Amino acid sequence: MPEPSFRRGRREVSGKAAPPLCPPVPGQATIKAPARSSSPVRAARLCASAALSALSALLWPAMAPGTACPALPALLALIGALLPGLGGAQTSVHPPEAIIPRGGSVQVNCSTSCDQRSILGLETQLTKKEVAHGANWKVFELSDVQEDSHPICFANCQKQTMASMSLTVYWFPERVELLPLPRWQPVGENFTLRCRVAGGTPRDSLFVVLLRGEEELSRQPAPVEPAEVEVTVSVLAGRDNHLANFSCRTDLDLRPRGLGLFQNISAPRQLRTFVLPETQPCLGTPRIIEVGTQWAVNCTLDGLFPAAEAKVSLTLAEQKLPSTSLYSKDSVLATANVKANAAQEGTQELACVVTLGEQDRIWKEDVTLYSFPPPSLTLSEPEVSEGTVVTVECEAQAGVVVSLSGLPPGHPAPRAQFQLNASAADHRRSFSCSAALDVAGHLLHKNQTQELRVLYGPRLDQRDCPGNWTWKEGSQQTLRCQAWGNPAPELKCHRKGDDALLPIGDLRPVKREVAGTYLCQAQSPRGVVTREVVLNVTYDQNNMVIIILVAVFVTFGALSGAAYLYNRQRKIQKYRLQKAQEAAAMKLNTPATPP
Image 1 (tube, rainbow, N blue to C red):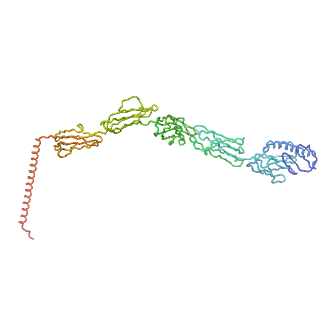
Image 2 (cartoon, rainbow, N blue to C red):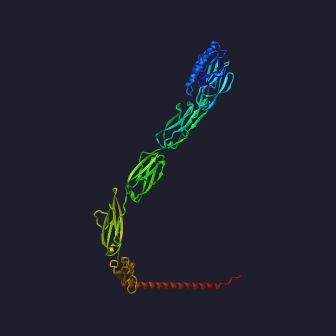
Image 3 (cartoon, rainbow, N blue to C red):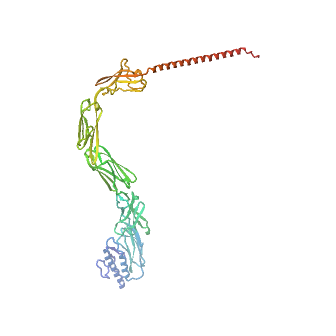
């Protein structure tokens, strides 16, 4: 008898036409019995078989496409057991269990122990193809298997018997992804690792592993449903997690089923941790700054991790200042050199912002930028002749109080002046103007000076060049004679009679030769003045006699000493000559020695 063909839940049996033995079932092809089958028992069996086929036809459409129905084999087996039968024929399937990759194929061997001609087939929704057969066996190839299934081998041999197999499909996850980590994670706070897994079966063999580098942080079985799942684990962030790589991996462990361990790993994601203290930055700057001057600003913050990742921004009046940063182990120091301009004059906000881990620490201070030019001090004429009236004036900007040297204190004002009649005493006189400005409670001062030059002279008077000097010979004296004037005059002093120069300066000792009357003349572009200077040297006459006697005595002593030395030398020479003559005479009187 040819094998039944299952299509859309219907069972059709090809054979010769025969009167129906059982009432037809709606939607079921009529089963016609063979001509030789006329006994009541066989007819009952045929009716039961038809009922079984009809039940199968009703159950298959109720199943969703691609959905296995584990209860169906049991139901069919129960019905088959209720049917009356003869003998102990059995149906078997090989392999009873199989696991294949999704889209793969497998060969299923259906066989029966019936020793009579029987109908042998494989009930499944999968694509099947008979690839071999024998008297009581058939081999079917199931291809393009996409999901788990339970194919049923059946045999009609006097009664219908069945055997089902378990076909498991495995496939790797289509996507294993570690969701993005926080850009920056504060140290000491928990963060969550989230691994998203799409697909992958069988789920009872699929595990999701969360990793830090190669270290396993968590291993969890993948939930059965839904197809796309998310597995999480909470991790406490520490400094050792900074720049650590995190990833997730799926382990499809099919080793208990005779296959291997299949792993899929996500792309790693790097974590950056940080410590930013709650303390505020320390901003170092002067509170008042003069427009046009250059000044230094610095900002520092300690207790940072990693300090090198900290960014410091310095701003003045919301304008960023160019700065440089120096880093140590856990701190940062930013410095900037600032030159304020006139447009920024007034109270401005200076701010320091330290940024780390997308968080900021801000400190602001008010600074006052002021303009304070020095006062203007003027002389009506910086160089005047003696007797000229000179005006001295000091002036500053509005809001500044000035004071002028030589002028008594008066009402505070930005301007002060006075006049004077220039004299020789005013030559090189210095005038000072002091300006005071109150800036944010700080009293600032600036000064300006000017020097007056007075043209006078030449002058040669008794005070500077006395007209009469009387000194004792041999004493230690200083002769002083100086001419004054602007421009400085040239002074010349000559003695009357021989034009000898007056010895101005130290005389140590005073000699009588310098005595005399001198004519001193001081000359400059403004004129000439002369003055007579008399220099007297006194001495004692007794001193002269003593000097002469001392000189005679010294001369006599020198001559006496010379005569004594001369006579003594003559005696020595005479004695030596006498001894030489005696020695020569003795040599002549000595007889010769015989040979």
